[in-house]
Length: 263
Image (cartoon, rainbow, N blue to C red):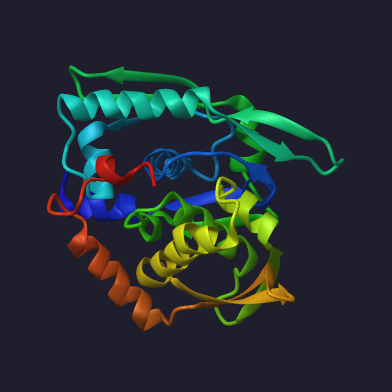
């Protein structure tokens, strides 16, 4: 593909219902999340149903700045898609009940042609198709340089809360809420969660995305019980500079996502 076509694909939008971001619980690696986001970016606003979305493996790799996988890389890509297909996510409904959803209904990989065909699961339609209210929309490009799975989760969360570029937003979470939302519940001690999840995600969001985020801790005595975020949009000039930098940096010289996708 031409460089201009790759840039166009990076500029496509990811649109999700806020419930899918704020009320779901799932565990996907950075690699797996990027596959899902790339797939969602193929959806057009006017689509009434999910299509069998087709893309070439080399196209996906160029968009994400990965060396084209061959041999071992194909095996890892197939394994990543299988894990996405096998994993369910819990979503809390408006009536208080929770239900399980699947990301993928059916994947096909043609190694001869180097293509992937994937259809999203039909139960995801209310969360991804023809959304008119209570949804979050952002450009795929701002997630492409994230190395940590927690960065993608934090970025989506703050975008679902702070959606007006001209307004700075403050929002508050308990530590337990934040662990669940960022898929960091394995870190029982706050100091470990802060070092391995929170600081990692905040640093990458500030470095690579169109938002700036900072936080202060809330304490009861000496124990940290909550976190208050301050979120604001970067200036237009900063965003244009960042997009140009991302397009320049995403190339084969970048550390492959296949090596860091489990973070």
